[in-house]
Image (cartoon, rainbow, N blue to C red; front, top):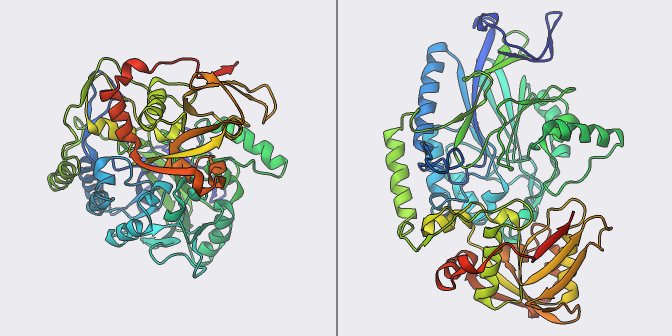
Length: 546
């Protein structure tokens, strides 16, 4: 059982090591179990865990296993006369056919059956527009939270959202505050967040935490779609430098959970998400002692932590896990029973959403992998599909838009959906070569990862100053001409200025063509009709001087 930095009855309990559970007897300490998820992205159906073993993947039980697990957890809690909270940090439906094609309805059906306590909205929860989000909030038997989303017409939090909830657990008042990621407008179509203002997370939390304490909250939980850095120690070292200089360095992902915890005293526990990276043990802020938990994504895991609160002082004093040294539990079918009712509901919704999705389109002789930077065979192929199908000269796309790899063997529409789940359409702009160079410069400034490209050969030298890093050699095999007008293909998501493509929004409407061609369909046609798997390669299109 982990111990926290806290003063209790005149002695200090320090973090580290384990204590016998008898140190926290029920007559003195309240045990509260918190189950948590984030970034489910519609992953409630049973699926193969290829991330564990690509050749012989075990099966993930999905939502039906989660429902059964929660029933067992609650049975045990009832025996012990303890309580269970079930929280989600956003991005709950968009990404899998059962989520996207049911507009999130099947996912909320699952969440109602599982008995969620609250959900904080993520940026992808706006993917199908406000009407869909409102409908899902109305369908849910639990509140959608976001204290930092304001409706411009009223100046208030929209009526389909709540800033917080207060839960009474045997006389201990627990406030759960929701914070959406403030960069949601940069990650959404403008019309999907029109009329909404997303306030900064840190300032919003600094306003709400004292209010919640005044309302009598003994314990404060922040449930946020802000993110936890992959390397938490390195991120904290950078944070210390920033705080010493009295400035938090701006990040394209918005403030991270470590920054929120450091800048906002009074948060006991935080649950974060967004970046799909789980941590087996929480991060503990060295000064404010906030515990930060984060799960993996796509419905493969749930987090499980037990906390212990002193009944008299109502202070958080300890936590432990269902599995030693591990807050995360992978929901494998071999280890967890499936709830029959939930399995029936999810299977029926999946069959309807995936009708025709498992027809074999082709057989891939080798796997097609993506990457998080530089070239990849799958990234190149997506861009090549865009130029080939539309006749554009150049195509760009972002790394985050390609969500899965393709494995060798039968290729189905379901496989292509997993790669490109968001239904984006191809937009073409007519722009001078100088504009294309400036757009690439945008994406290699600072420590940006760059972009995926087609139809162009580029060399990037990051040793040079921003604005001078890019040399374009050719477009469509012809020498680059900064004054020539080229046809540039991107997704409609990027055309709206998202992911650092704000420069595109300045192009006159007369120079824009909305093709109506879905990128996923273009990729399918390119593979099947144009022998794309043999035409695309890792080549000299994007070279970086190391």
